[in-house]
Image (cartoon, rainbow over all chains, first blue to last red; front, side, top):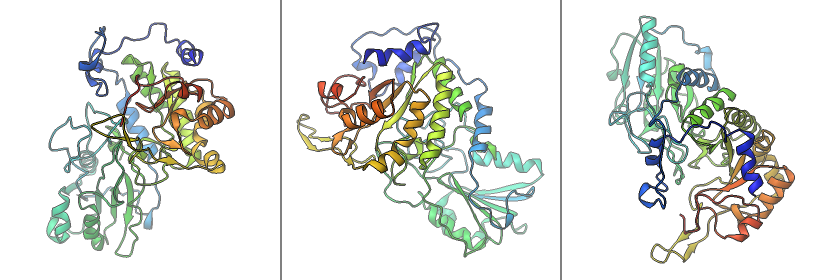
Length: 244
Length: 188
Protein backbone atom coordinates (compact mmCIF):
# COMPACT_ATOMS: atom_id res chain seq x y z
CA UNK A 1 0.00 0.00 0.00
CA UNK A 2 2.68 2.49 1.06
CA UNK A 3 4.88 1.51 -1.88
CA UNK A 4 2.01 2.00 -4.32
CA UNK A 5 1.19 5.42 -2.89
CA UNK A 6 4.71 6.81 -2.67
CA UNK A 7 6.20 5.42 -5.87
CA UNK A 8 4.50 7.93 -8.22
CA UNK A 9 5.59 10.77 -5.94
CA UNK A 10 9.26 9.88 -6.31
CA UNK A 11 8.97 8.66 -9.89
CA UNK A 12 7.69 12.10 -10.96
CA UNK A 13 10.36 13.84 -8.86
CA UNK A 14 7.74 15.58 -6.79
CA UNK A 15 10.10 15.66 -3.83
CA UNK A 16 12.36 18.13 -5.63
CA UNK A 17 11.54 21.76 -6.12
CA UNK A 18 7.79 21.31 -6.23
CA UNK A 19 5.85 24.62 -6.08
CA UNK A 20 4.20 25.47 -2.78
CA UNK A 21 0.44 25.25 -2.51
CA UNK A 22 -1.18 28.48 -3.69
CA UNK A 23 -2.62 30.10 -0.52
CA UNK A 24 -5.82 31.06 -2.33
CA UNK A 25 -6.75 27.40 -2.81
CA UNK A 26 -7.45 26.99 0.90
CA UNK A 27 -10.54 29.10 0.55
CA UNK A 28 -11.76 27.02 -2.37
CA UNK A 29 -11.98 23.83 -0.29
CA UNK A 30 -15.72 23.47 -0.04
CA UNK A 31 -15.57 19.86 1.16
CA UNK A 32 -13.48 20.71 4.20
CA UNK A 33 -13.74 24.44 4.84
CA UNK A 34 -11.28 26.25 7.09
CA UNK A 35 -13.71 26.16 10.01
CA UNK A 36 -13.34 22.39 10.34
CA UNK A 37 -9.58 22.14 9.89
CA UNK A 38 -7.95 20.30 12.77
CA UNK A 39 -4.56 21.83 12.14
CA UNK A 40 -3.47 25.38 11.57
CA UNK A 41 -2.06 24.86 8.07
CA UNK A 42 0.34 27.58 6.98
CA UNK A 43 0.45 28.49 3.33
CA UNK A 44 3.56 29.98 1.79
CA UNK A 45 4.36 31.44 -1.57
CA UNK A 46 2.56 33.72 -3.96
CA UNK A 47 -1.21 33.94 -3.65
CA UNK A 48 -3.51 33.52 -6.68
CA UNK A 49 -0.60 32.96 -8.99
CA UNK A 50 -1.20 33.19 -12.74
CA UNK A 51 -0.57 29.80 -14.33
CA UNK A 52 -2.30 30.44 -17.63
CA UNK A 53 0.80 30.90 -19.82
CA UNK A 54 -0.20 30.59 -23.49
CA UNK A 55 -3.11 28.27 -22.79
CA UNK A 56 -5.76 30.59 -24.20
CA UNK A 57 -4.36 30.05 -27.66
CA UNK A 58 -4.17 26.30 -27.07
CA UNK A 59 -7.80 26.17 -25.98
CA UNK A 60 -8.89 27.92 -29.13
CA UNK A 61 -6.98 25.49 -31.32
CA UNK A 62 -8.08 22.44 -29.37
CA UNK A 63 -11.67 23.57 -29.46
CA UNK A 64 -11.61 23.82 -33.22
CA UNK A 65 -9.82 20.49 -33.53
CA UNK A 66 -12.27 18.85 -31.17
CA UNK A 67 -15.36 19.89 -33.12
CA UNK A 68 -16.90 17.04 -35.09
CA UNK A 69 -18.97 17.65 -38.22
CA UNK A 70 -21.68 15.04 -38.19
CA UNK A 71 -23.42 15.93 -41.41
CA UNK A 72 -23.20 18.77 -43.89
CA UNK A 73 -26.47 19.20 -45.77
CA UNK A 74 -26.20 20.65 -49.27
CA UNK A 75 -22.57 21.62 -48.74
CA UNK A 76 -23.64 24.61 -46.69
CA UNK A 77 -20.43 24.52 -44.69
CA UNK A 78 -18.01 26.20 -44.92
CA UNK A 79 -19.89 29.44 -44.93
CA UNK A 80 -18.85 31.75 -47.73
CA UNK A 81 -18.28 35.10 -46.06
CA UNK A 82 -21.93 35.68 -45.09
CA UNK A 83 -22.85 39.36 -45.06
CA UNK A 84 -26.04 38.93 -43.06
CA UNK A 85 -25.84 36.63 -40.08
CA UNK A 86 -28.80 36.07 -37.76
CA UNK A 87 -28.09 34.67 -34.28
CA UNK A 88 -30.75 33.26 -31.95
CA UNK A 89 -30.74 31.71 -28.53
CA UNK A 90 -29.84 32.16 -24.91
CA UNK A 91 -26.42 30.57 -25.21
CA UNK A 92 -24.92 33.15 -27.57
CA UNK A 93 -24.43 36.16 -25.39
CA UNK A 94 -22.83 37.39 -22.23
CA UNK A 95 -23.93 36.01 -18.86
CA UNK A 96 -25.92 39.04 -17.86
CA UNK A 97 -25.92 38.47 -14.13
CA UNK A 98 -22.23 38.21 -13.38
CA UNK A 99 -18.83 37.11 -14.61
CA UNK A 100 -18.23 34.88 -11.60
CA UNK A 101 -21.24 32.60 -11.73
CA UNK A 102 -20.15 29.09 -10.89
CA UNK A 103 -22.39 26.05 -10.55
CA UNK A 104 -25.43 28.27 -10.64
CA UNK A 105 -28.21 27.86 -13.16
CA UNK A 106 -28.70 31.03 -15.19
CA UNK A 107 -30.92 31.54 -18.20
CA UNK A 108 -29.20 34.36 -20.02
CA UNK A 109 -25.69 33.96 -21.30
CA UNK A 110 -23.35 31.37 -22.65
CA UNK A 111 -22.65 28.32 -20.53
CA UNK A 112 -19.07 27.12 -20.46
CA UNK A 113 -18.85 24.71 -17.54
CA UNK A 114 -21.07 22.19 -15.80
CA UNK A 115 -21.44 21.76 -12.06
CA UNK A 116 -19.61 19.66 -9.49
CA UNK A 117 -16.08 18.28 -9.31
CA UNK A 118 -15.37 18.95 -12.97
CA UNK A 119 -16.33 22.59 -12.94
CA UNK A 120 -14.07 25.51 -13.66
CA UNK A 121 -13.99 29.25 -13.29
CA UNK A 122 -12.85 31.56 -16.07
CA UNK A 123 -10.52 34.50 -15.90
CA UNK A 124 -12.25 35.60 -19.09
CA UNK A 125 -14.87 34.18 -21.39
CA UNK A 126 -15.24 34.80 -25.10
CA UNK A 127 -18.92 34.66 -25.96
CA UNK A 128 -20.08 33.01 -29.19
CA UNK A 129 -21.85 36.21 -30.23
CA UNK A 130 -18.69 38.19 -29.68
CA UNK A 131 -16.73 35.79 -31.85
CA UNK A 132 -19.36 35.82 -34.58
CA UNK A 133 -19.43 39.60 -34.61
CA UNK A 134 -15.66 39.80 -34.88
CA UNK A 135 -15.64 37.29 -37.70
CA UNK A 136 -18.49 38.88 -39.65
CA UNK A 137 -16.81 42.24 -39.40
CA UNK A 138 -13.84 40.89 -41.32
CA UNK A 139 -16.14 40.49 -44.33
CA UNK A 140 -18.03 43.74 -43.64
CA UNK A 141 -21.03 41.66 -42.63
CA UNK A 142 -23.69 42.41 -40.03
CA UNK A 143 -24.90 40.27 -37.17
CA UNK A 144 -28.49 40.53 -35.94
CA UNK A 145 -29.34 38.73 -32.74
CA UNK A 146 -32.18 37.71 -30.45
CA UNK A 147 -31.14 36.16 -27.15
CA UNK A 148 -34.35 35.53 -25.22
CA UNK A 149 -35.75 32.07 -25.95
CA UNK A 150 -39.23 32.84 -24.66
CA UNK A 151 -39.55 35.82 -26.97
CA UNK A 152 -38.13 33.98 -29.96
CA UNK A 153 -40.38 30.97 -29.51
CA UNK A 154 -43.47 33.17 -29.32
CA UNK A 155 -42.60 35.28 -32.35
CA UNK A 156 -42.86 35.06 -36.09
CA UNK A 157 -39.35 35.25 -37.45
CA UNK A 158 -40.30 37.72 -40.14
CA UNK A 159 -41.09 40.23 -37.42
CA UNK A 160 -37.76 39.67 -35.68
CA UNK A 161 -35.25 40.42 -38.39
CA UNK A 162 -34.35 43.61 -40.16
CA UNK A 163 -35.84 43.09 -43.59
CA UNK A 164 -32.73 43.46 -45.62
CA UNK A 165 -33.57 40.27 -47.41
CA UNK A 166 -33.12 36.76 -46.15
CA UNK A 167 -30.16 36.26 -43.81
CA UNK A 168 -27.32 34.37 -45.43
CA UNK A 169 -27.31 32.07 -42.43
CA UNK A 170 -29.19 31.65 -39.17
CA UNK A 171 -27.22 30.40 -36.22
CA UNK A 172 -29.02 29.04 -33.18
CA UNK A 173 -27.19 28.66 -29.90
CA UNK A 174 -28.95 26.90 -27.06
CA UNK A 175 -27.81 25.33 -23.83
CA UNK A 176 -28.77 22.73 -21.30
CA UNK A 177 -27.54 22.40 -17.72
CA UNK A 178 -25.93 19.35 -16.13
CA UNK A 179 -24.05 18.83 -12.88
CA UNK A 180 -22.64 16.22 -10.59
CA UNK A 181 -25.08 14.79 -8.09
CA UNK A 182 -28.07 15.14 -10.41
CA UNK A 183 -29.30 13.38 -13.48
CA UNK A 184 -31.26 15.09 -16.21
CA UNK A 185 -34.98 14.60 -16.19
CA UNK A 186 -35.44 14.73 -19.97
CA UNK A 187 -33.60 14.99 -23.23
CA UNK A 188 -35.13 18.29 -24.28
CA UNK A 189 -33.25 21.55 -24.54
CA UNK A 190 -33.65 23.79 -21.48
CA UNK A 191 -35.36 27.18 -21.50
CA UNK A 192 -37.83 26.46 -24.31
CA UNK A 193 -35.00 25.43 -26.58
CA UNK A 194 -37.19 22.96 -28.45
CA UNK A 195 -39.72 25.70 -29.17
CA UNK A 196 -37.01 27.98 -30.49
CA UNK A 197 -35.94 25.35 -32.98
CA UNK A 198 -39.53 24.69 -33.99
CA UNK A 199 -40.14 28.36 -34.62
CA UNK A 200 -37.06 28.78 -36.76
CA UNK A 201 -37.31 25.60 -38.76
CA UNK A 202 -39.93 26.61 -41.34
CA UNK A 203 -37.93 29.67 -42.27
CA UNK A 204 -34.85 27.81 -43.27
CA UNK A 205 -34.70 28.20 -46.93
CA UNK A 206 -31.86 30.05 -45.31
CA UNK A 207 -29.32 27.57 -43.96
CA UNK A 208 -29.80 27.09 -40.24
CA UNK A 209 -26.95 26.14 -37.96
CA UNK A 210 -28.03 25.03 -34.53
CA UNK A 211 -25.77 24.55 -31.55
CA UNK A 212 -27.54 22.72 -28.77
CA UNK A 213 -25.88 20.63 -26.11
CA UNK A 214 -22.66 21.66 -27.79
CA UNK A 215 -23.70 19.88 -30.98
CA UNK A 216 -24.21 21.69 -34.30
CA UNK A 217 -27.15 20.65 -36.41
CA UNK A 218 -27.90 21.94 -39.87
CA UNK A 219 -31.42 22.39 -41.14
CA UNK A 220 -32.47 23.26 -44.63
CA UNK A 221 -36.21 23.02 -44.48
CA UNK A 222 -39.23 21.78 -42.60
CA UNK A 223 -38.54 18.18 -43.41
CA UNK A 224 -35.00 18.06 -42.11
CA UNK A 225 -34.93 15.88 -39.02
CA UNK A 226 -34.27 17.39 -35.62
CA UNK A 227 -32.78 14.24 -34.26
CA UNK A 228 -29.53 15.33 -32.68
CA UNK A 229 -30.84 17.08 -29.59
CA UNK A 230 -29.95 14.40 -27.14
CA UNK A 231 -26.24 14.04 -27.72
CA UNK A 232 -24.11 13.88 -24.57
CA UNK A 233 -23.24 17.22 -23.09
CA UNK A 234 -19.82 18.72 -23.34
CA UNK A 235 -18.81 22.19 -22.27
CA UNK A 236 -16.27 24.41 -23.99
CA UNK A 237 -13.51 26.16 -22.14
CA UNK A 238 -13.15 29.89 -22.01
CA UNK A 239 -11.98 30.46 -25.55
CA UNK A 240 -13.12 27.50 -27.55
CA UNK A 241 -16.09 29.43 -28.91
CA UNK A 242 -13.73 31.71 -30.80
CA UNK A 243 -12.54 28.74 -32.81
CA UNK A 244 -15.39 29.49 -35.12
CA UNK B 1 -5.20 15.70 -26.41
CA UNK B 2 -1.65 15.41 -25.14
CA UNK B 3 -1.09 19.17 -25.36
CA UNK B 4 -4.21 19.77 -23.39
CA UNK B 5 -3.17 17.27 -20.73
CA UNK B 6 0.26 18.84 -20.54
CA UNK B 7 -1.14 22.36 -20.18
CA UNK B 8 -3.53 21.28 -17.45
CA UNK B 9 -0.66 19.50 -15.73
CA UNK B 10 1.48 22.63 -15.80
CA UNK B 11 -1.36 24.67 -14.31
CA UNK B 12 -1.87 22.13 -11.54
CA UNK B 13 1.81 22.01 -10.72
CA UNK B 14 2.02 25.78 -10.70
CA UNK B 15 -0.68 25.82 -8.08
CA UNK B 16 1.21 23.31 -5.95
CA UNK B 17 -1.04 20.35 -6.57
CA UNK B 18 0.66 16.95 -6.62
CA UNK B 19 -2.33 15.14 -8.04
CA UNK B 20 -4.88 16.10 -10.66
CA UNK B 21 -8.15 14.22 -10.14
CA UNK B 22 -8.72 13.26 -13.72
CA UNK B 23 -9.14 12.23 -16.51
CA UNK B 24 -12.57 10.61 -16.58
CA UNK B 25 -13.43 7.32 -18.29
CA UNK B 26 -16.41 6.57 -16.06
CA UNK B 27 -19.15 7.55 -16.52
CA UNK B 28 -18.56 6.24 -20.01
CA UNK B 29 -21.96 7.46 -21.12
CA UNK B 30 -24.42 4.65 -20.77
CA UNK B 31 -27.38 7.00 -20.54
CA UNK B 32 -27.66 10.55 -21.87
CA UNK B 33 -29.42 11.53 -18.66
CA UNK B 34 -26.37 11.06 -16.45
CA UNK B 35 -25.23 14.26 -14.83
CA UNK B 36 -21.49 13.72 -15.21
CA UNK B 37 -21.23 12.45 -18.78
CA UNK B 38 -19.81 15.79 -19.82
CA UNK B 39 -16.70 15.22 -17.68
CA UNK B 40 -15.57 12.33 -19.90
CA UNK B 41 -14.45 12.18 -23.48
CA UNK B 42 -16.73 9.83 -25.37
CA UNK B 43 -19.21 7.02 -24.90
CA UNK B 44 -17.11 5.01 -27.32
CA UNK B 45 -14.66 2.94 -25.26
CA UNK B 46 -11.93 3.02 -27.87
CA UNK B 47 -11.97 6.80 -28.33
CA UNK B 48 -12.26 7.30 -24.60
CA UNK B 49 -9.22 5.09 -24.12
CA UNK B 50 -7.11 7.06 -26.60
CA UNK B 51 -8.10 10.28 -24.88
CA UNK B 52 -7.27 8.84 -21.46
CA UNK B 53 -3.88 7.68 -22.57
CA UNK B 54 -2.87 10.98 -24.16
CA UNK B 55 -4.26 13.07 -21.33
CA UNK B 56 -2.55 11.04 -18.61
CA UNK B 57 0.71 11.18 -20.54
CA UNK B 58 0.40 14.96 -20.66
CA UNK B 59 -0.45 15.40 -16.98
CA UNK B 60 2.38 13.17 -15.80
CA UNK B 61 4.94 14.59 -18.23
CA UNK B 62 4.20 17.93 -16.59
CA UNK B 63 5.16 16.35 -13.28
CA UNK B 64 1.67 15.91 -11.81
CA UNK B 65 0.06 12.59 -10.85
CA UNK B 66 -3.07 11.72 -12.77
CA UNK B 67 -6.04 9.82 -11.36
CA UNK B 68 -8.18 7.78 -13.72
CA UNK B 69 -11.75 7.85 -12.49
CA UNK B 70 -14.30 6.63 -11.61
CA UNK B 71 -13.66 2.92 -11.31
CA UNK B 72 -16.16 1.50 -12.38
CA UNK B 73 -19.78 1.63 -13.55
CA UNK B 74 -20.64 5.10 -12.23
CA UNK B 75 -23.27 5.74 -14.89
CA UNK B 76 -25.89 7.52 -12.79
CA UNK B 77 -25.87 10.30 -10.20
CA UNK B 78 -29.21 9.64 -8.49
CA UNK B 79 -28.66 7.43 -5.46
CA UNK B 80 -24.98 6.98 -6.15
CA UNK B 81 -24.54 7.00 -2.35
CA UNK B 82 -26.55 5.31 0.40
CA UNK B 83 -29.30 7.44 1.88
CA UNK B 84 -29.05 7.99 5.62
CA UNK B 85 -31.59 9.13 8.17
CA UNK B 86 -30.92 12.82 8.66
CA UNK B 87 -31.62 12.64 12.37
CA UNK B 88 -29.95 9.33 13.18
CA UNK B 89 -27.11 9.23 10.69
CA UNK B 90 -26.06 5.71 11.55
CA UNK B 91 -29.34 4.46 10.13
CA UNK B 92 -29.25 3.66 6.45
CA UNK B 93 -32.61 4.17 4.79
CA UNK B 94 -31.58 2.94 1.39
CA UNK B 95 -28.51 1.43 -0.20
CA UNK B 96 -26.63 2.90 -3.12
CA UNK B 97 -27.50 1.72 -6.60
CA UNK B 98 -25.60 -1.25 -7.92
CA UNK B 99 -24.31 -1.46 -11.48
CA UNK B 100 -24.81 -4.97 -12.76
CA UNK B 101 -22.17 -5.91 -15.28
CA UNK B 102 -21.41 -9.24 -16.84
CA UNK B 103 -17.93 -10.20 -17.93
CA UNK B 104 -18.02 -9.21 -21.64
CA UNK B 105 -19.77 -5.92 -20.92
CA UNK B 106 -17.24 -5.04 -18.29
CA UNK B 107 -14.24 -5.84 -20.45
CA UNK B 108 -15.46 -4.56 -23.81
CA UNK B 109 -17.03 -1.33 -22.63
CA UNK B 110 -16.54 0.03 -19.14
CA UNK B 111 -13.12 -1.35 -18.33
CA UNK B 112 -11.63 -0.73 -21.77
CA UNK B 113 -10.49 2.91 -21.36
CA UNK B 114 -9.04 2.12 -17.96
CA UNK B 115 -6.77 -0.39 -19.64
CA UNK B 116 -5.39 2.49 -21.70
CA UNK B 117 -4.96 4.45 -18.49
CA UNK B 118 -2.99 1.71 -16.80
CA UNK B 119 -0.87 1.29 -19.90
CA UNK B 120 -0.13 5.02 -19.75
CA UNK B 121 1.21 4.37 -16.24
CA UNK B 122 -1.40 6.42 -14.45
CA UNK B 123 -0.36 7.05 -10.87
CA UNK B 124 -3.74 6.45 -9.28
CA UNK B 125 -7.27 5.26 -9.89
CA UNK B 126 -10.33 6.49 -8.00
CA UNK B 127 -12.95 3.94 -6.98
CA UNK B 128 -16.56 5.06 -7.43
CA UNK B 129 -19.46 5.81 -5.10
CA UNK B 130 -21.90 3.20 -6.20
CA UNK B 131 -21.89 -0.59 -5.93
CA UNK B 132 -20.73 -2.99 -8.62
CA UNK B 133 -22.55 -6.31 -8.77
CA UNK B 134 -23.67 -5.80 -5.18
CA UNK B 135 -20.49 -4.59 -3.46
CA UNK B 136 -19.40 -0.99 -3.08
CA UNK B 137 -16.72 -0.09 -5.60
CA UNK B 138 -14.22 0.87 -2.90
CA UNK B 139 -14.52 -2.43 -1.11
CA UNK B 140 -14.99 -4.63 -4.16
CA UNK B 141 -12.21 -7.18 -4.34
CA UNK B 142 -13.28 -8.49 -7.74
CA UNK B 143 -12.93 -5.12 -9.42
CA UNK B 144 -10.03 -3.67 -7.44
CA UNK B 145 -7.82 -6.67 -6.75
CA UNK B 146 -9.05 -8.87 -9.57
CA UNK B 147 -9.57 -6.68 -12.61
CA UNK B 148 -7.45 -3.63 -11.90
CA UNK B 149 -4.44 -4.87 -9.95
CA UNK B 150 -4.18 -8.43 -11.24
CA UNK B 151 -5.64 -8.54 -14.74
CA UNK B 152 -4.49 -5.07 -15.80
CA UNK B 153 -1.43 -5.22 -13.59
CA UNK B 154 -2.00 -1.73 -12.20
CA UNK B 155 1.02 -0.69 -10.14
CA UNK B 156 -0.22 2.57 -8.65
CA UNK B 157 -2.67 3.20 -5.82
CA UNK B 158 -6.44 3.24 -5.55
CA UNK B 159 -7.94 6.23 -3.76
CA UNK B 160 -11.59 6.42 -2.81
CA UNK B 161 -14.07 8.94 -4.11
CA UNK B 162 -14.91 11.41 -1.35
CA UNK B 163 -16.71 9.48 1.37
CA UNK B 164 -16.97 6.36 -0.75
CA UNK B 165 -15.23 4.20 1.86
CA UNK B 166 -17.70 2.53 4.16
CA UNK B 167 -15.86 -0.10 6.14
CA UNK B 168 -12.26 0.00 7.35
CA UNK B 169 -10.21 -3.18 7.12
CA UNK B 170 -12.60 -4.77 4.65
CA UNK B 171 -11.82 -1.98 2.17
CA UNK B 172 -8.09 -2.43 2.60
CA UNK B 173 -8.30 -6.15 2.07
CA UNK B 174 -10.43 -5.56 -1.00
CA UNK B 175 -7.70 -3.47 -2.58
CA UNK B 176 -8.28 0.15 -1.50
CA UNK B 177 -5.02 2.01 -0.74
CA UNK B 178 -6.10 5.52 0.22
CA UNK B 179 -9.27 6.77 1.89
CA UNK B 180 -10.33 10.28 0.87
CA UNK B 181 -10.86 12.77 2.26
CA UNK B 182 -10.24 10.80 5.49
CA UNK B 183 -12.53 9.54 8.21
CA UNK B 184 -15.52 7.27 7.88
CA UNK B 185 -18.97 8.80 8.01
CA UNK B 186 -22.44 8.90 6.51
CA UNK B 187 -21.36 10.80 3.42
CA UNK B 188 -24.18 11.45 1.04
